[in-house]
Amino acid sequence: MQHTESSNTASNRTKVPYITVFGVLILIIVFFVLWRPLNLDRTTYIPLTQQVQTTVIEREPLPAVVGNAAIEIVDDNTANEPKLTESSDQPEDDIVQDEIDKVIAQEDNSVQYTVGRGDTLYGIMMQYGVNRSDIYLLTEQYKQLANLRIGQVISWTTDSDHNLNSFTWIISNNNVRIYERVGDKFTERTETREGVWEPFSVSGEIDSNFIADAKNLGLTSNEIATITKALQWQLDFRRLKKGDKFSVLLSREMLDNIHENSQLLAVRIRNGSKDYYAVLAEDGHYYDMNGGSLSQSFLRYPLVKQARISSAFNPRRLNPVTKKITPHNGVDFAVSRGTPVLSVGDGEVVIAKYSGSAGNFIAIRHGRQYTTKYMHLDKILVRAGQQIKKGDQIGLSGNTGRSTGPHLHYELHIDGKPVNPLTASLPVSDGLTGKSKTTFLEQFKDIKTKLAFATEKASLVSTTP
Image (tube, rainbow, N blue to C red; front, side):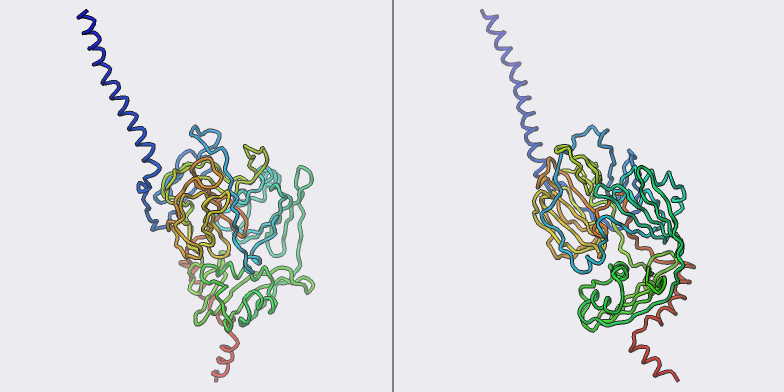
């Protein structure tokens, strides 16, 4: 009997440590679960103080380092980590277009693009979401399309499903090649133009607004759009006031006395007492009167922390819920709630509010061509109308709106069209140097005279002996 009681006592003693250990484990788990999402102070904002050149290689498993961030590009079909099953990225609010936006925006099914350094036809069209198989078909059928040159202009049209309908390549002023879809292939035809390029200049004064006054002097919508794009980072055209002046120098192609095409050579706008210049250089870009850049540089990513891409840009994405083709116009970064979100460039906040299925939503206008959008935020840290700088913290990522998990949905729009933010050609802020700058400054001496306002020309004549 005594032996049995001793055994029971020993058994009870051995149970105590197990119960204690189990209870401690439960407390640790509960503490970790509650502390992790609520302790937002664990994420700190690290300012980006310099522009870092980045290269994103498609389907590359290694991370691409961006400033203090490392963005790991992974294939949705190979990632073993939990993924978002579905989210809706359609805000109720949209940016209100003004008259300048309407001039810059192109037709919904057409895009015009000027080839820049490092561009390839595949890369250009992929960033605009053109059907990959159509790009492959066109470039395989016509190998000469690998010979695009800096400064050449290309354009194309697509249907509502982003299938390529036609493609135009302006090789030179008198040599244009047009490729059109016929069934399951493309046909090529060449147009040889016999137009004559003539100089055209105009000078005026703001009476009502720049768009209306420029049109009254004979400038076309395309010419006005080129001017606003060239000076978009230096000048807010909405702030031009009555009495401000502008002078424009163009080269226009005339076919049978009809104006067909044009090229902006230089423009000067005087806002108050300050002059703004944009002058075309040999490399096809515009610079100020000293050969300095007119562009603002962008960050490639809106984050400073490592993140996985859970859903890529895909204008032909099959919705896993509805089984319908619905475009995914941005990139989803699988980041935890409370991760700092940065503005990728200088700009003005135009929307900062809760907006339907997009949740807490921020839209930023950068210049006149570029807009970025940030959705499903946990917290908004800016307000509409606020001017911000590249790298500024604008919000914290979250899971607001119609979303099945914490993430950041990020979009980049150029000329009103969504593009792939991971591959899009972003502006650079490098000015001219060396021989190129010397040549440019010599040419500018003649251009500056041609851009003189009427009152300046009169003064010059009156003082000439």
